[in-house]
Image (cartoon, rainbow, N blue to C red; front, side):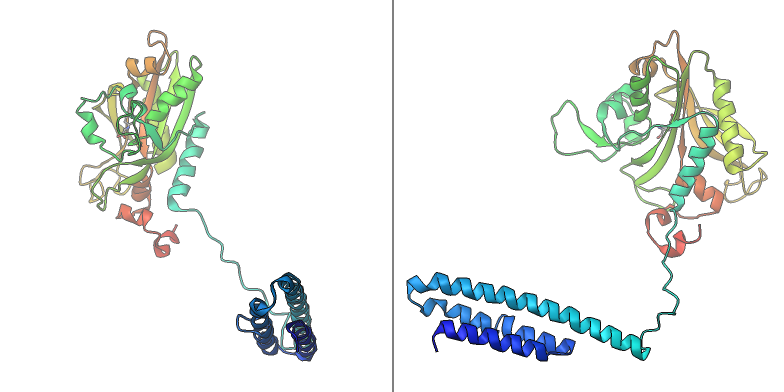
Length: 348
Ligand code: DAH
C-alpha cells in the first residue's frame, strides 16, 4: 500500500473505531491510538521523509487535514458520550439535583482594613477627606521638605529602604518612613485653599521586628490648614477622635515633644482603655496610652507646601493603625497582622 493509501486507511479505521467508543476510557484509548505521540497517524506523518520530494507537500497537507478532522470528530464524540452518561445518571437518580449546594466561603476584611475604615469614618464626621500619597517617595518629600535636612539627627530615627536604581540621582527614592510627606503633596495641590485631609497608608522602616514593631505598618496622618487654626483645634480634634475610637468619656493628656515638621510639637495620650487610668500592664502602670504625635505645622513646612506662614496656620497629627487596634482588641503581638494566620484573622 502506498503511504497515501495508508493514510486514507487509517482515517477510515479511526472513524469506524470512534463510533464504537461508548465510554470515556475507550475514547481516551482511541485518542492515544490514533492521535497520540506514538499513534498511527503521527507515525505515518513521520514517514513523509521516505517519499519523493515532489510528493511530500501533498502528503503533508492531507495528513494535516485528516488530523484536524479526527480531532474534531473526537471532540464531538466526547461531548456526546458525556451527555449520554449524564442523562443516564439522571435517569437512574445517581445525581441528586435536590442536594443543597456547597456553601461559598466568604472572606471578610482584615483587622487593619477594618480599623482604617473606622478611622476614615471618624475623621469624615469632622470634615477630613482621604488623600492618598505614594508609598515610594522622593527623599525630598520624606525628609528635606519636612524640615529634615541630610545632616539632621532625626534621620537616624527614620532609617529605611532605598530604591537602588539611581544611586547618584538628585531625586533619590525610598519607601516612605511616615505618611507625613503626603502633607507636602496635599498642600502643593491645594494651596492657597484651606484644606482638611487625612493621609492613610503603609510606611516602612529598617527596623528590628519584635512583638511591638514591624518593618512595615500603617499610619494615618492628619493635616488641617486654614487662616485661623490654633492648637485648641488640634486638641479638640484629638479628644473627639479618642472618644469616637476608644469610647465615650475618654480623657486625653497633652505632653510637649519634638518633631522637625511641627512647632510646637506635642504627644497625645488617652487614659488607659483597660484600667481607666488606675495603672495596669497594658499602660505599663502609668494610666496613659500614647495615641498620636502632633503639632502646629512648622512655618518652613507651610512655606514648602505653598502657603504663606504669615497668613496661614495648620495642625498635623500622626496616628498608628495597628497599635490602636492592638490596644482596642487586646492583641499582644504586632506580627499577627502580617502573618496571614486565619486563626488570628477570623477573630475580628
Ligand atoms: N511622622 C511622625 C512619625 O512617623 C508622626 C507624626 C508626628 C506626624 C507629629 C505628624 C506630627 O503629622 O505632627 O513618627
